[in-house]
Length: 98
Image (cartoon, rainbow, N blue to C red):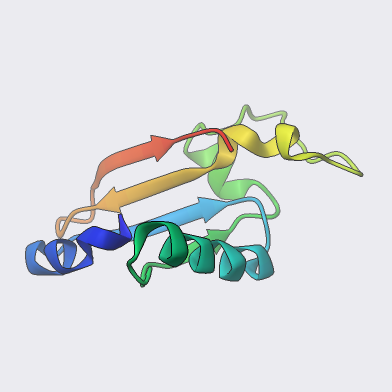
């Protein structure tokens, strides 16, 4: 996704990541994205710690919660990237495990 930044901009597309983890983790991930993909990620990643976005977009069931002492397995299905078109409609959502 980061490697296609110029194409997204040219087409007026916005990229948004959503995760139940905090901003500190997102900063680390952006470093990993740059290292693995060779491109600087410029898109935002929303920190959905209260699961409102994840539940609204059916990434998690309505009764989902984050347990104390959670492991990555508890939130693996929440890793999602959204591509939103200039018409403000979701064009692609990609959910993937850790």
